[in-house]
Image (cartoon, rainbow over all chains, first blue to last red; front, top):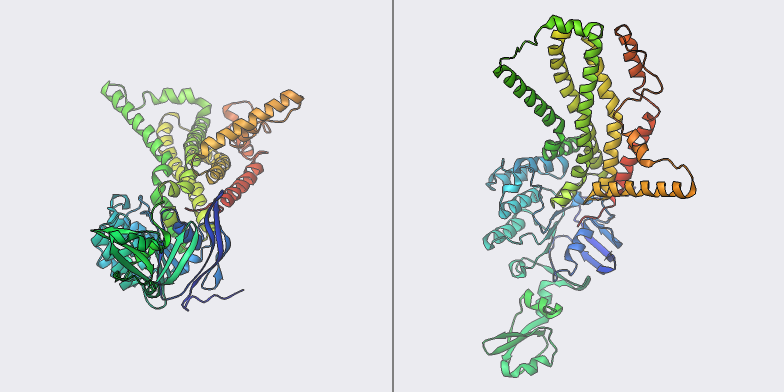
Length: 288
Length: 287
């Protein structure tokens, strides 16, 4: 029997992973290596395959191809995955029928990775109403509780699927600060799927862009930003930008801009460092 | 063990309302009885049961039999209340997480599926049964004490009757619960409709085949009805003539009939349906 160590930093490895829903191909031959000590952003349009990818990585879905975590192959509904990885889904998926206290007691009882010390520290500063039913909490409070539970687990990988959807900007900032401060270190990794790219832009080290089930880009953020630039010209010179066939053109106050390869030089143009959102649009394109 | 306890506790905290259906029904019966007493009292009717001696005479040699039969009946009624739990609880246990969008939360814990499923099944079967045993013991004793004031009789027949009623209903209920478990695992949205449609479909098909070919394929619904039957099959050991003197013989015949030719079939089907349902449940995808 293979002995899989959980003390060593571990990585996710996906090889030729495909997933069909009937005739619809949700994941198309996805191959990825997600190393330890990384904060990785997973970007894609709605329906691009982000959630399917994460759910396959957690064994929630059956799939073709192979996925391994810490060198150990993952099968559909494997329980051991959750000794190494924790997950916060895109919907407030806690059980509304339990109180906050019962929810915490439940996870403490079923999850051997539960760390009482961390949980006590987090609880002390959380101001969560312990005897209130989860169903009566605001969305922000529910997310806070989910986060508290997740951060109280000694796991190597954290997968976040649109965790801050519908939350106000102050809470979203607090959420990511907490993740960075209380979870992340050089042995642990975080995979974040989000639409609010600008909020996580400064913390991400790698970017994965998925479109129509295919991984179309997987690169370190710094390298990616150095490969592209924002080129801005007066609106009457739009044809000079169009000559490079950009997927998206930006318009603002008499100027037009596009994200182009960093080697492009146009006389009289203004250049700027691109944001991730710009690069995403340049790679994937706008709405169809 | 710690995981198992946490799982059972979670099931209790999320499904206690439905689980306690027999207790709610018992409380309803008690409430109606209490209202009856209050109305009787308000109308000046005697509250001491009237002439106890007269009742004793009426009961005559059947005193113990009355106590026994009343408790068999009481336990059987509780069995019907448990029946409601057994057909509704599997769907809640297996599918309420999906319907309430919290399935991912529960299933993203490092607990084996077999342990999760067994804790749910055990909660359903033992939880329901322990509950009706407790209700039967408490209210069987209290009600029999009250009745015994008027009819007298051997009080051991109270517990004999309760035990017969409770044990006699156990396997039919486990069979029914397992059948509901199987269909709830098969269909997370509307298991009852699916089960009814399948059984009606099979019944129609069987009747058509029998009609067309002249064959005598037995009815599957009749078979299921027998397996889930609430009555005690007396056919193999018919009762002796009912007289007060042969109460003991009658009770012992009833006990002999408690395990009939369907007993092993109930156990076998319960095992098959539990594992079959669990297999389907484990193959579900979680999105």
